[in-house]
Length: 214
Image (cartoon, rainbow, N blue to C red; front, side, top):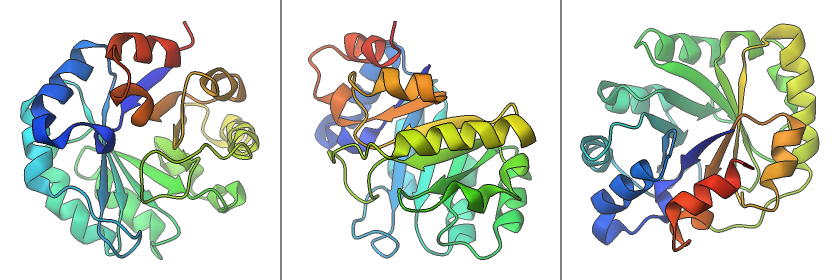
């Protein structure tokens, strides 16, 4: 199990230090939530902040767009060369075109499903992406409670991936903690995004270890 701490829950008055600490603690990725105040009712980080984050760590960035006008945002952040760029299929009409736009930048493309968006919508694109991010809360704010029905979605997506894209990574974001992490692992998840559970823990290393189910 790989862990992608969400800096949405970090201490923004000392962000560089928090990023360094969580990197040393064993983070596999640094999860950056980009919100525009339109697709979700919140606004978060611009490219200058993410540039500062990148300078603070050698851990790959995992960028999650919760925005309208996705191609515009890809162009704004592509120079940061994150490991992944994830975008919501609920927002984009031309999904394959955007997937290719991301891949053309030598960045791994990923699509995101909100909790109520069915897995069946991925039938014809799951083979074209490197990762699918399943939201286990409604996007927009950190610290929300995990939606248990997402466990069934993980299993359904893993079954689909075994048929069409066995190397697909499944990432989960929202309300992840040491109680539901083992259930998510058993269901077929590969990467867990966690904000509050890690950054509110007194020991980042212990929090990450707990999420790995070691």
